[in-house]
Figure 1 (cartoon, rainbow, N blue to C red):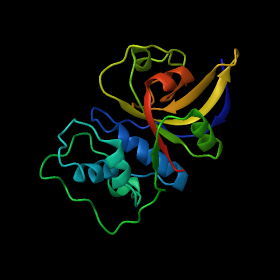
Figure 2: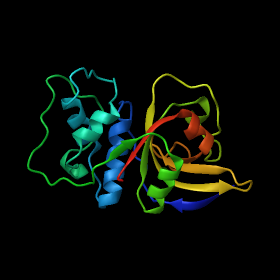
Figure 3: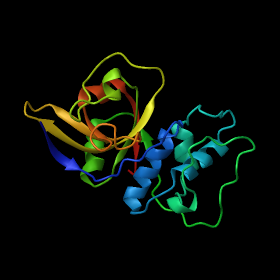
Figure 4: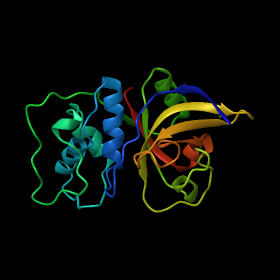
Length: 204
C-alpha cells in the first residue's frame, strides 16, 4: 500500500481516439491552478495552427503547445472537445474570450522540482514512454518495466508518496477516462519516471 504525502484532486477526462494527450495535460494543469474547467480543444487547435507539418492523428509537440497556450485557455463550454480530428482548412480559433491559466515552463526531469511544485499545490505535466504495465495498472499501480512502445504520452502528476518499504511513487492523472487505473489515476514508481520520462512542465 502506498501512503500519500501530497495529493492534488483532479478529474480524469477522456481524450477518446485522438492523439490529444498534450492538450489535455496542459488544459488540466492550467485549469486546476486557475480554478476553471478549460478547453483542451482550444489548446489542441491553437497548437495545430502553429505546427505547419501537422497531420491528423500525428499528435502535438509539447514545446509548441506551451507556446501556443501562453496567454491561457478559454472555459471548456466555449469550445467543447470533439471526438474527431480537425481537417484542413483548420477551423479558426474563437476570439474575444477570456483566457485563463498561468504560463508553463518546460524542463528536464527533476524529481525534486516535481515534489516542490506538488507541495505548492501545482500539478506537473510529464511526457513519458509507455510500457505494457502502464496499459493496465494493477490495484492502481503501474509496475516498472524497461520495454516501451513507440512514441510518448503526456499525463499529469498530481501527488507523491511512499510504500511500506520507503520506495517513492508518483500519482498520475491520465486522459483515458475513469476506467483506467482507479478513476483514471495510478501510482508509478520513481524508477519509471527516471527511466521513461523525457521532460516535465508546470507553472514555475
